[in-house]
Amino acid sequence: MMQNGIWVFGYGSLVWQPGFEFAERHIARLGGFSRSFCMRSIHHRGTEAEPGLVLALDRAVGASCDGVAFFVAPARAQDTIEYLRERELISSAYLEQTHDITLRDGRAVQAVCYVIDEVHAQYCGGLALEEQAGIIATAVGGRGPNDEYLYNTAAHLRELGIEDEDLNWLEARVRSLRG
Image 1 (cartoon, rainbow, N blue to C red):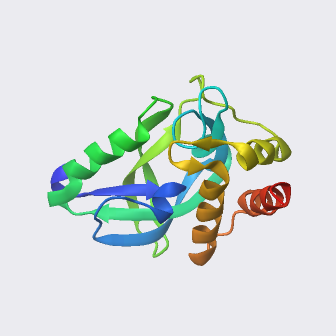
Image 2 (cartoon, helix red, strand yellow):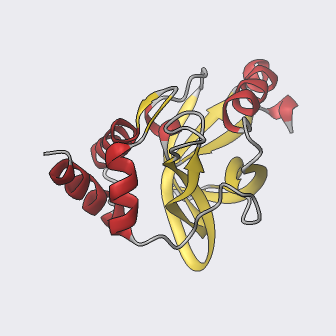
């Protein structure tokens, strides 16, 4: 797979801060998963004592998630995977998987995706949006305030023409909670 380059699917911070060199970027859709604040963040956007929330791909029948597919050229593929593993697999709450995604131009490709491990202690799927907003409004971790992560993700998805009603609601609610 690496010798032909790799596709990486971004749905959260990878959308606005990929951190790796890519040759192509396309809007894409992954079926069978939804974008969800279903992972407690104990490193980047919260602490073990006061976890924040970060986005993950949560398996859901009939769901789909629109995001960004990055094509990484063969010469950069191995370095990119190593970088992503260091960044995304910090606590083993994400599983690195390959899934079929559909690019907006209609092409189907296989992409590396980081999905939540539903049996991991950090998994918290099913939290009410109001509860999510309360956590996001106050949590702070090693990479900064949790609300900043939400605001950046929502803004960049909107810029790309990707609508996410839950993210938009959370953004408005967190802004109101923060005054």
